[in-house]
Length: 593
Image (cartoon, rainbow, N blue to C red):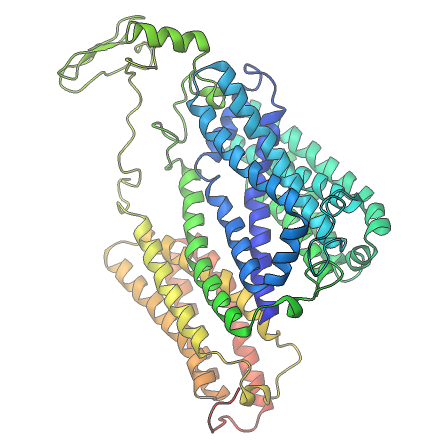
């Protein structure tokens, strides 16, 4: 059970590094973008890309902290009483970064904009460095089991410095890659070349520092070096290959798979670190089982982690999809397109003189609106507004705003944004409803199945199982993303379906989930591998029907379901092997654990 919880904890670490790391890296590029004029366009792309999602990515940090202090309290106490300086700096950086990002867009004076922009950029570098330094202190074994270790040398040492530098570089590489793809998707060739060159430079520098880091780890963290060059070596090699593939895709102007390759490379590095550190939480001491809380607490943590994953992952996927399509607003304008000069530059806005002039003259430079809702703006051959419906501006000769417009007392005509961004012709109004219903049904299925599973029961331990059966703790980390994929695919397919087709598809999903939960009850509650085999065969047949029906509606949703169907097929082979190896298909008697 302790290993399962540790796996859940590490899933959160990887997710935060891949998603939150890109946000931190964007702050690095904001820092070195240059002055207000030269860095206007790069900063605007950063703002437009981060605004809808930057707060949501910190969900994973909260998740990791809660799991760590609940499931491994002794390790949490040792870490916080030794590494409290970088932890406080990292948390302070997160707060200042968020405040700077938010206030920079609202500031009017140039000095204020520069102050908030500097807070955002510098905090975006400080925070990942501190997290990397903490990882280096843990990996090198500088955190004692009893805690209260040296508050300076525990994070100011060769391994920690290497970890901090690599964290900043990896975040920069991720952010530049994501921004390159975003610029290419917007068909902005200048920004594409700008961020592509920086992504390739960051990738090359990260690779060079990693090579130098080999010698640093060999001298300062011999156990970590031995494990990285041993059991974790395949992951390190795959990470290098993923990084090279990502750079090649960037150079060939590919959008499909580029971000996945970059994120996969970073994720594999972190997973390799986790494998190298296993079975210790503090690098060279305090094993996972020694630091674990009682089994009753761990069981609750597992249940909460599964439910949280089923709720959070589909929500984040939906958020990223909406922001990618431009359905998530930034301020009072659409997320994509229609950017005015005052909006460009990541909050550059009016200058100090402009803001003061606007405050003094009110609406002297703006279009005057009469009480009936009409407006006339004729500064540059502007369009005449009709009194019943407000100003209609022709794009070729529309109303032009003077410097004083855009502040107190001035109302500008902006492109109309639908109140309901999901109200697209031919699509359901509330596109989030199928996702919510799908996530709820999947959560109920996961809970029902988990309550029936008893891997520690005596009758189950006596079964003759094949050598290729995974350990019990591995099933939780596997099923969590699989359940999340079912929820995402279900939401997509139900959104794409119409009328009777939607009802039939919903029935197919319901049948599949019922068979999914039923297998656990057939196998464990009846203590019958043969009954479980019958259930999993029915589930495989349902998977084929479900994939066929979903593919007719949404092919991407069918692709998302493929890992789930493949795992169920593997479970069928495993169940059949257990039946073949055990003569008695049913084990009677009271359940004992």
